[in-house]
Length: 144
Image (tube, rainbow, N blue to C red; front, side):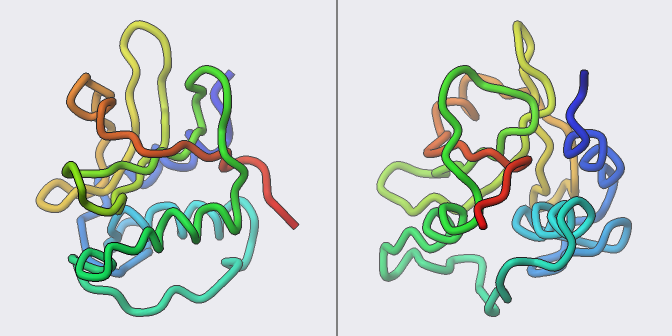
C-alpha cells in the first residue's frame, strides 16, 4: 500500500522549482515540497523557516537542515521505506541540504524531490543519488 505522504507528493509533480517557495502547482524548492506536504498532512508547520540563500549553511559548515529535521521527525532505521524523507549531501565535505521523499523501494527505488531546473519530479534513486544520502527520517510520525 502506498503511504498517504507519497500519494500527496505525487500531486506536486510538475510544480516548478522556485527557491524558498512552498505552493503546490505554483512553485517550491526541496524544503518547500516537504513543508507543503507537512501542511497537507499535519496542519500548521512546526516552526517558521527563516529566509535562506542557495548556499545557506555552507560558509559556516552548520548542518541546519539536519538539525531542523531532527526536531520534527524521528530518524528512520531499518530498510528503506516508501515515505522516508531523505537528506542528501550533494558534495563531499559539504553540508547536507537537499531533501527528497522515497516513493518506491525494491529493485528500482525512486524518490520525489524539487530540483533546480526540473521542478518537482520523481527520479530513480540511482547509485549516484543513493551514495549522497546523509540521513533518513520518518515523515509519517510526528514528535510532540
